Length: 443
Image 1 (tube, rainbow, N blue to C red):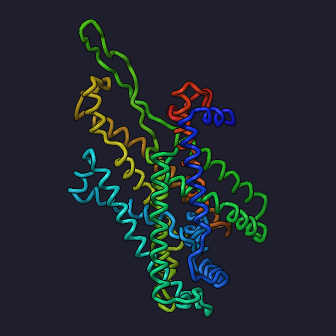
Image 2: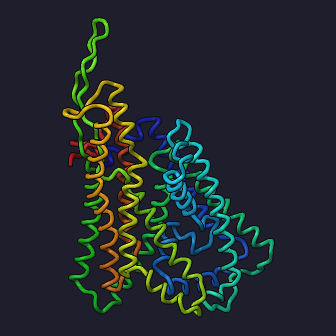
Image 3: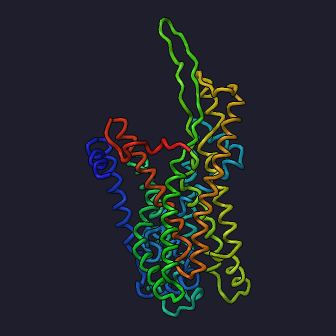
């Protein structure tokens, strides 16, 4: 692996992309430590400590994905969450609204949808910024805390905080887009991953403190958790690299005195074409009801019952979480892969699947195959995200985000390594894997 990184730095274009990505991620982490104006740090720490006691899993998830920026109330406190929410909304609307669906299929349609997503990100950031400013001004309504978090909560402070949070999210969104375009890897996923990695040391410390302070925890439980992490990582790698190869034959074409085509190749369909996006989307949606309930007064009787119903570890929570992951896996796979377009491209260039007629039957065959191979990938993602919650809730340790965060980090690292691998192999350098390519695993 060290030699592969050395080879990567020998390629000028790849070296520039890696340096560009690293610099932009450093800028993101620096911004995650610049606190909002007019905030009392000690009062803020006490406020979030009480929030963690009431809804630690959800608050911990938001804070983990922002790399600690949310609990510190920095200029990047909202992180990339508004952009993810806006992306979910736009992709759902593209399926429901015919005009948006037609627009998404046009050559320049995706650019317009991306622009609409940016507008939606700004709107959601404004709404969340206003909510946060109101909560910080009156922390006692939620936690009963007497000490004020804001030193001078006037109208100008509200305006400044909302503007800062919105601008911070817009800047993070721009950083992600620039990394995707000019760097290496998916910028948004890398920003999420960096936030998770930045919060892992504190999370690991908290988990170990819980482990050693829990009398019911022993060597068997420690072995179980360690094995679970290993299985999660190995399973994620296996599912991510698994590919179903559909054989494709190209007919011979004679042009003048030259013969074209006639070779046999394959059409690779990934078992998990959606990557880690379904888990990111599912976790974003599943924490929304609990987040809203946590900010409502406990004096309302129905709030306590609803919070228990949607609390992480409850049967309803686990079922909805798993169904969201499966649903988003199929949904995002359908967004990424168009069987009709693939069939048309094959027919256009004289390719066909042996035993399948070109055109409609080829599209149906690809769609059926894709539906079948997506099911094990979707079920695996759901299982590997839900099982850690069940085990940690039974043992009384950890929280809901460890399983999802491990999957996201592993998936993003594999995707980034895959892009670096493609640069290396096209220039005849030795990549990360000597005997096989990241994208050529057979299932």
